[in-house]
Image (cartoon, rainbow, N blue to C red; front, side):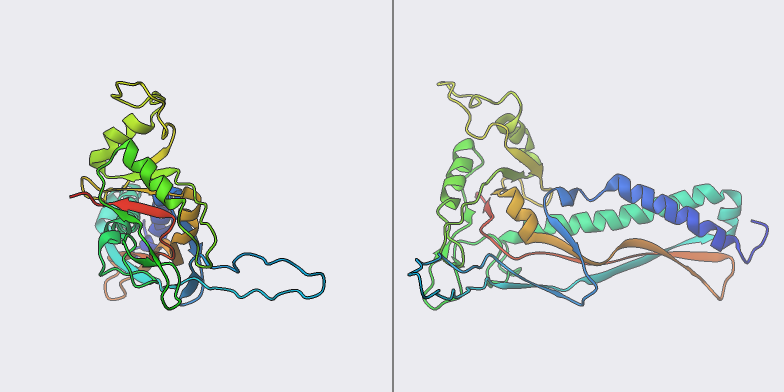
Length: 299
């Protein structure tokens, strides 16, 4: 710290080290639920569940050509996030390590929580038609088109039933009747429940290790959702919850990065006594399919 012109360069490795450590501590819990992809392109086009339909019989001579039905296309276009924090020469000289840790920690917390809030908002906005998906419907809607052909039928992944074991099993059963874009059975496995913070105590009661029998059941019947995974979505209002196929949710809901969160150093040329550290990320969250999740928005 003897050279007033090199102090900020000496500080930078300490800031980035603390930033990386803290960000790892925060870790993106969202990646337990959704997928992640990194790209160098301006945007990514991703199709929902399409396919070729059933394979016809072979007559021994002529091989029929399959006609592919493509799913609705979701375009992911990452957006930049950036903000800077400053450290003065005096503060760094008094406590170089402490100032570096504080700056790295706060920047990591800010970027981590920004991404997490975007994650929660993706689910809370799922009930809002203003946030339409590739099929021009909200993520959770009663009238999703099965495909893009004229006169195509619809399916619903939005219910209004209050949170209960019966509601969960009903959603699981209804989802088994979904068909894919090309008309094949969807065959999903709704093995994950997403709940509001207010519903977490009930989720523990329904899905916990001791929940082999239906809670509060006079008949002591076997609990059909015993052992089901659950995850708390802070963005849900008190009564909202969702049931999903955990494997397909990771495939068709994701965060797309051009640049993962990082911290950069830029020295203020006009003032050698102040150093600026910029937190930066370039990403977007979104979904390309609705069949893998059913949500409830009770009155």
